Length: 220
Image (cartoon, rainbow, N blue to C red; front, top):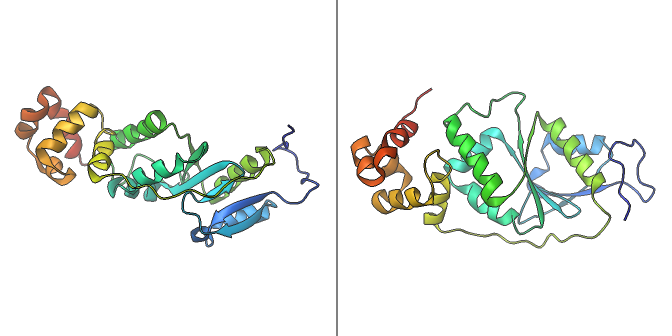
């Protein structure tokens, strides 16, 4: 099976490379950059992912959107949905103008969540500078993929709120599955955990209480 050279300036003889794009991405600058690169954009209502290049599903998020999706738990179901594809990539866009470690999340919570995605969901992550950089990655990815049909038939997956909460908690340093389950059993939700005192936490998790309390009450 032959592969296209992603660094060649020549287009395939059979026509332009095509990427299927979710309708909600129509106004994205990424799309206009892809067209400039000679990529054919085909818009569809995708139940999962933002871009499909042959057999790879790509979810694109700006850094601020990614952090918000962690807070509101939306990211958990999206990661599960991506796993329906044999190959999936998460693109986090905007490191040119925004630090991954600033904003609404503590930097260690951000690092912990990134590690959870890589180790638990085994979805690779690409950090891009901006929309133009994202488009270049997608273009090269599309040109590297073998020529074969692929399916856009994927469905939404909904995880229970308890499982979503556990996943979020395990993204924090010092909180593994056992500790997360103990916290959920005692405090029921993230708000109660965040508002609990160090002494209350100590009754549940012992020596880890000080570190967990400090993380939830950190202010840069």
